[in-house]
Length: 493
Image 1 (cartoon, rainbow, N blue to C red):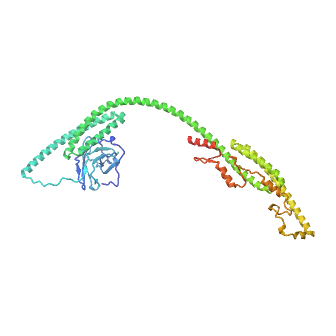
Image 2 (image 1 turned 90 degrees about the vertical axis):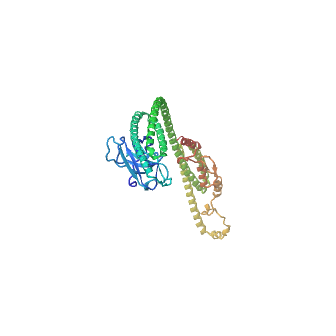
Image 3 (image 1 turned 90 degrees about the horizontal axis):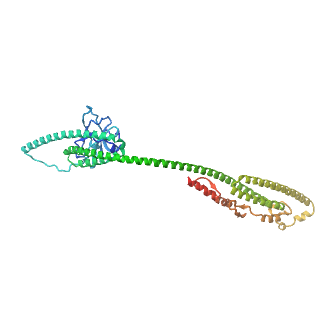
């Protein structure tokens, strides 16, 4: 047996599509002794056409498909195969490949398409439990036993002939059953249910037949099959009538279901169109919101840049003289207008007006920068005049006496007036005006005002705390209402 080199053809065909009567297994023992080879005898009827890839397998009782075989052997192709003749075949299974447990097994003939064409009665692999008995008989008893054996052989021959007749009758009944099954192809669903019940009855019959003796097994199985087929024919006729009535009911129900399905399909189409329109509207709203959010984000970035520029200019303004104080007040007025522009941008999302106002503010910044440059030039000229005065004083006689003054008595000048001999006359007024400069650190979202000692990092963290991140996408929002609408659109998806 060359099982490892080639696998048998199998399929997922279930029991209700198999034909178990086309191959008949003969002389199947009730049990086989483990450790020895066994020979399987079977008969090919005229209803099967054997092929090269047919095989005989040993299956555990309760199998569902032909893939559940335990072992197999390729079926020998018959040499003298006639048109309507019955062919006796045999095949030998080696002991090495046989099951080692005591479960019930059966032979099954499977064709090249993986369909079961015949199945034997169940059997077991176990040792004989009866003890060996030595029987001593006389010559007369031996003759009597021989005569009984002859009578039994004769009776067995008659039983075989009757068995063949019953098999022919069985085949005729099976042919009639096959014709009846062809007429009921339109009712396959209901017939499958009856065939399943038929298979369960056959299993029960095979299990009961397995408990009988091997000598009476073939005759009893044939008689049981004939009786079962007769009952099956009557049941199938009754079932055919009931199936016809149920088929009419099913047709009525099918027509009703078709109308109901048509109505539901129309409703579903209307709902799908409404849903498609709603999705398109949501997509438009989402795109508009994304554009507005991008504009807001860009505006906030510009605001951050402008805020940093304002802070730098505040530091520069602290070094200016008193005449810059008026310009600083004007700058505060511009910052107030800038804050109002931020609120307007946040509420209306109009980037155009904000850009215009920012250009005006930048223009004013440039004007202030030019004013600052002019003041720096004046300071430079004052330093030059101071240097000329120092040179003149060095030539006079009083300069040495002034130099003799202790350095501890020289007043300490601030860093801004270190280059001037007499200090910056506007330093005190500049210091007082710098103290009075109001803060410009205000949150553009909640309008909270911060003091000058807060760092840029803390101010930036406060502004970003108002920004809401979407957990489903990478969008950010500064308005709670816009964020809620965006989350509602995600819930509709």
